[in-house]
Image 1 (cartoon, helix red, strand yellow):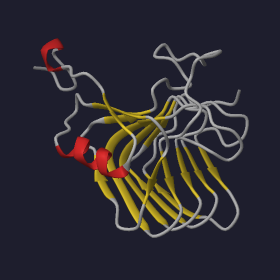
Image 2 (cartoon, one colour):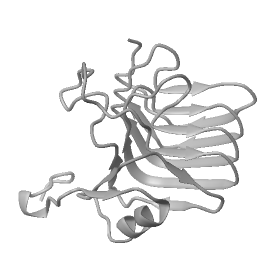
Image 3 (cartoon, helix red, strand yellow):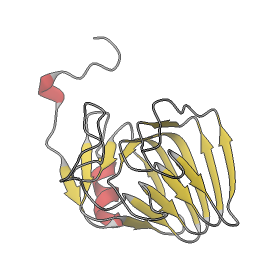
Image 4 (cartoon, one colour):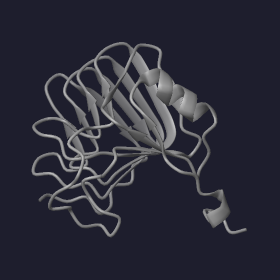
Length: 174
């Protein structure tokens, strides 16, 4: 079977979660064909280490449709994750956000130390917004995000960010 090919029989119904504990439970049995829908932005706390095993974690309706066009209406108005303190790690997953105002994004960091490894941030108004704290991104792709300011990544204030081996195609301003 070709790499990346998902047979129809392997497709699963999306799992909806609203808390960090529910997300951890869903990820425990996740694989590359798993889709997890967050009903609200999930706050990640100190010591959180999420391994998506190739799963997609998304809002119910991402801001950018499957065909790559910004939706005029009906998109989710929340992000996927927030980080405000402590040390948090996310790895091996795709994250899709909705449209959020101001500094928000699919992932919004306002403090702490945040590490992303092999994560794809896609189909939101902004992939990640770092307003404070430290952020390390390695082996990530930030693809198909549209925003007036910051496009795929917005770094503000006293944020310290290290970006290593990042792919930024198809990211543009609206």
